[in-house]
Amino acid sequence: MKKWKISLLGIAIWSLAASSMAAPKELDKVVTLVNDSVILQSDVNAMLQTVRINAAEQNQPLPDNALLTEQVMEKLIIETLQLQQAEQFGIRIDDTRLDQAVAEIAKERELTIPQLQQELEKSGISYSIFREQMRRDMTASEARTIQVRRRINILPQEVDMLAEQLNKQTLQTVQFNISHIQLRVEEGATKVQREETQQQAQQLVDELKNGADFANLAYSYSKGPKALQGGEWGWMRQEEMPTIFADQIKSNGKGAIIGPFRSGVGYHIIKVNDVKGLETVSVTEVNARHILIKTSVILSDDGAKRQLEKARQDILAGRQTFADEAQKLSSDPGSAANGGELGWQTPDLYVPEFKDKVETLPKGTISEPFKTVHGWHIVEVLERRNVDRTDAAVKNRAYRILFSRKFNEEAQAWLQELRAGAYIEQLGTNDDQG
Image (tube, rainbow, N blue to C red; front, side, top):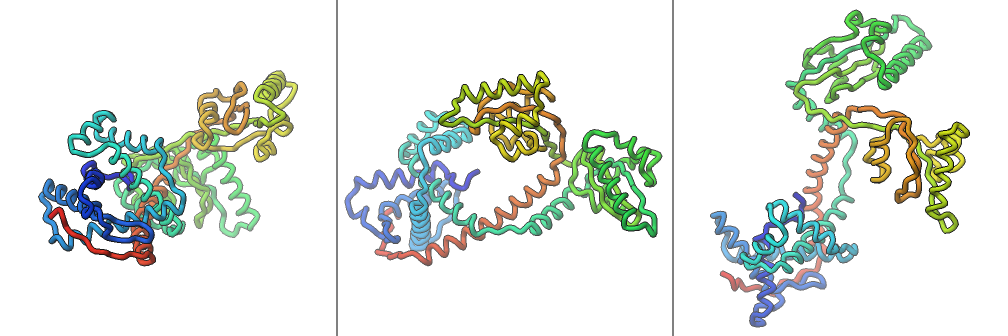
């Protein structure tokens, strides 16, 4: 749930505050100055009443009136300071974002928007006040997030250490079915011989990632103890593996190719054939190439489309190669220099129209010209492959945990600094709701 979200009952304080505007003037006297903003007695009374209602519903005891009023005042001061920061940053929550947030709350409560309005009305809460307090909460949260993010520094070593801890916890009961290729480096081998063996190992890894059969390569090249079984070691927990295997296998999922890595006897390659007890993450990567033509004041949409249609026909007819046409026509200099190739990427990195093409286009087929925010394209999918991303997912989880910890710590520090640097004058309050 997002940090700006609040309970429906919590919104009542602003409905009550709004209704109190029609009350006698003494209820609306200024009780606190916060820089160039003010907090009214009606704001304090409204929040006090809501806190008491919430406490009564939850059978929660409250402190005495003086302490409770002090806590409420502090909350209002902190919110005011954050809204002032938001104003300095030019943060505005427009109606579209606000409508989306309201719809999300209604969905979570399994209500339609009209039903949500009815529920608010039954609680005596104005729907317009509800929306505006949500806008305030979202605005304050965005200001806080912008400032606190700047204060957070997460080192790669921190992520790696926490990811390793998470892996150890996860892998205690996990079983791996693995296969192994060992390329031996003889004792006394020269530097050149060691480098040649390393290059051979890397070549085997490249072949495996391009779909080569692991068992066939193990029979042909491996000098390991399971070479005559196609390199297969079968099912093992991490603690049952040779140390050189256990040190390399972390949270790798099914199909992962690990290596080449070196030990005292040579270079090793491991394949994870299957996994039991581990939630793995696999993604499809696409190697595609494209030609991009951008429109301009002198080149219309129709003109760009016609250029690509002609290029496509020339490529299909064999009059030109895709690479030559990309180098000659493409407005994407990075890929044009590589014959239009974009390299292995997950489709999610692309804009929606391009993503749809590379996900659905049959391999080896050149698309018809299509338009994205970047211009007009033709694209060809060269290859697709499934890649294990379990280890990356664990690191992402570790990063999120660290970020959450540091965000909460830094948010408190920032708010304290914000308050310490503010001009705040207490003019006195009365607990009119006691």
